[in-house]
Each structure stands twice: as C-alpha cells, then as structure tokens.
Length: 454
Length: 90
Image 1: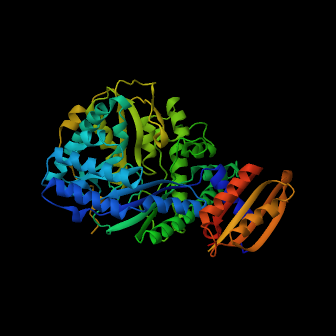
Image 2: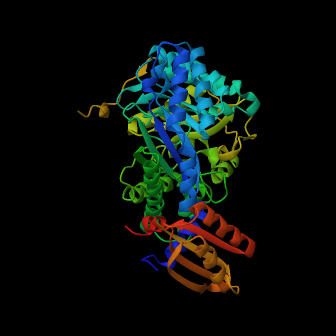
Image 3: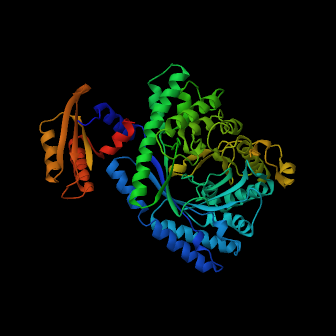
C-alpha cells in the first residue's frame, strides 16, 4: 500500500475526528485600490463589484477542498485594502455606507467575516483615517460581517497616543451601540501595534498595501492535536516537550500548506502565506490553556504559565517553518479568553488575570484578545490598557493587539455569551485607579532606540 | 488523482464486498488494498483508488460511501492521498 503506513493514515483521521484538527481559515486578500473615486456611490459600486467577482468561487472552492481532502476548513473569509485609503474625499457617514457595501458583498459571497474597515495611524491621521475611525462605532454596529482594525503604533514610528486616547472612546461607544448584544461590536474591532499586512485571522485581517492584487493566506489550527501529543509524554523533560510540539506543528502546517496551494491554484490566485498559529475554539479539547496545563500547571494563569507559553509558541514556529514555503501573518499561539474553554475556566476562577494575560502576550501572539471587562470601565482605562499592550509590541518588535469588550451593564463575575467561535467570556476586573491624566497628555511616544537599525 | 478510502468498524460479513461494490460502480480503479483486525475486534481496511476516471464526481462517491458507513456502523473516510503524503513525509 503505497509508502504510507496504516498508523500514519489512522493518525491523520484521529487528528481530524477526535482532536479538532482543521484549517481555521482560508482568507482571500483583495486590493481595492482601483476602486477609488470622489463619488461615494461610485466607490461603493466598484467595491461591491470587485469583491463579488474576485471572491465569487471562494466559498465553493473551500468546500470542495474540504470534501476531497477530508480536512474541515472552518472559515472562508475576505480581507481588503484598509478602507481609510479610499476615504479621503468622504465624511464618516459616507464611510458607514462603505461598511454597509462591504457587508452586502460579504453576504453575497457567503464568507463569514470580511476584514479591512481599517486605518493605519501609527504616526498620524489623514483625512480618510479621521473619517473612518469616527465611523467605526456606527459602521460595526450596523453591519454583521464587517471587521475593523486600527494600527496605533509600530516599532519604527512609536505610538500615537492621540489615536490611543480616541480608540478607548471608540471601543466604549461601539460597546454601547451594541449593548443589546453585550457589546458584541467590540469583538469585531482590533487595535494593533505592528499590524501585519498578510494576517488571515479575524478580526484583524486587512490586505496591506505591499500585497498583490489578490492573494490566498491560510491559518492553521490544532491545539487539540498538540495537547494529545503531550498527553503521551507525561513527566518527560522540556527537551522532549519541545520536540513533540515541533513534530506535531510540522504535520499540522504541512496540511495547511497543501490546502493553501490547492486553494490558490483553483482560484487562480497567488499563494501568500501560511500563518503558523494555534487558534483555539470554545469546543472542549481545542484549547491552548489545556496545553499549558498538560505541561504541569494546575491552572492556566498560575506561576509558570508565561514560560510554558513561551516554549509552546517557539516550538510551534520551529516545527511549522520547515513545513511551509512562506510563513507570515501573526504566527504564534493565540490566547483569546472567550474563545478557549480552558482560558474561560481559568479567568472565571480568578487565576487568570488581566495582568497575567498581559505578561503572556510578551511571549506569544497576539495580545489581549476577547477580554470582557465591566461596562462601567472608563474610556481612559481602556486607552491605557491599549497603550500598555502597544508598548510591549513596540519594544519587542512584535505584533500586539487589543480586542476588549466593556460589556454594558455587566459586572465582574457575570458571564457574557457571544455564541459560535467567539464563545463566552467571564467579566474580568480592571484596576480601579485612574489613568486619565496619563492618557490625556496625547502626542506621540517616540520610537525606541533599537528601531534605528540602518 | 488518487484517494485513500479508510473503513473502520466492527468486523461483519461482506464489508469488503459492499465497499468495493460501491467503489467499482463509480468506475474507481482499486490500486491497492489491505485489511487488518486491530485491537478489540476493530476492522480496518485501507484502499488506494484511482479516481481520475470516475463516472460521477468525487463528491457523489464519497457521500455514497459515507452514508453506507453510517447505516452499517462504519466510519468511512475518502481523502486525497496528497493529505497523508504531505503530513507524513518530508
């Protein structure tokens, strides 16, 4: 029987059936730069036509590959050029119209999210950036599938503290606009430092300006597979742990690479990157937290969690990088609290705190992700949380992000249900001491000394 | 294009016959076949088939095999051979 061993075939089948192995997302990046016009209706028409023609076969192709390969492809998504680049002639009301057009285009192609209602303001605002950011609360509240992101810092440019102050307010307003769904709108908004241009994962995906006309990026997954592999080496030293994770990550990524190549061939689109990520879901057995616990921690969030996560994150990259010809995006283990059954339990029990999560983001992608905080958290506190996270990204030359939900009317101890992949989040406490005067200063935090590498 | 059909379940009379019948009805050529009884009486069959000259599409054959499996207590997977090669060889 060819050169394949029965055990290899059975291993793959078990990974899919019992350990939640899947391709998390095939994301088609589409440039909208040629949709520019001074007339808002023309822009909207061009955007709709371009997305619906380029991505016409995306969902069907994903489903075909899924069936032929026997590997679930959970999400098919679209990322587009940051909309602020088209928004210069327009008002924020016009930007809302663009968001509605994007929503319509996403619905008609059948994808489950579209990212790119975005602005890059790490050094300052253009007219378009201003209009777009002002439009975010309305745009994300009145659309279902549109995701937005704002890049407020880079290692090269430093941090735009005016934008950080504004984003605290935007997050609050967006939460209030979607109060009937516990601030659900905020689950579709990411505030970045060092945002990657080729990220296939939502809510932070956008199609960067260095990207080609269209591109296929793929995000793999597989926390369950890693957990299962570690169960078999209980008590062995960290050299063995790292080797086991590397081997598992290699297999998972090879599968992602195969799917990415096949999808780009069938869609006649350039293959971009495979994002080497461990992306959890709320399903039992698909959790990053339980991998850390498998390493010997009683509960995710206790002392040792950061070291365990550092090892995991590094070994995933080392195993994955050889399995794929092009690697990019966020590439690292995700720790979205509401989307990970183990994290939910650890946060609900009070072991996993916001401060510990912040420490964990120093050694993994991406940042404080899907964190639910009390509805009465002041905007300035949210801005300060964003600033802390951005500082970690800026200084360590890595991507960091904040996706935080100040759930209206909710208090510490409540649990907020978002449903589906977004899961449910326990409301976590924030420090009550004010950061208002700090945030109020505004201006820019200069780029760090090690940004001067030329 | 080649695919691997995996059949897992309790050993019963006629399982090989019934699966190969569906496969041959769709004009899929069986290139290799092996079968074993694993621990606890689990029947496992692995078939390498050429699906380049199917009379129907791949989806139909896979769906028919799957529904046969579900009706008779077997897990039947039909997957492109490439998946296994990618994951298990460098």
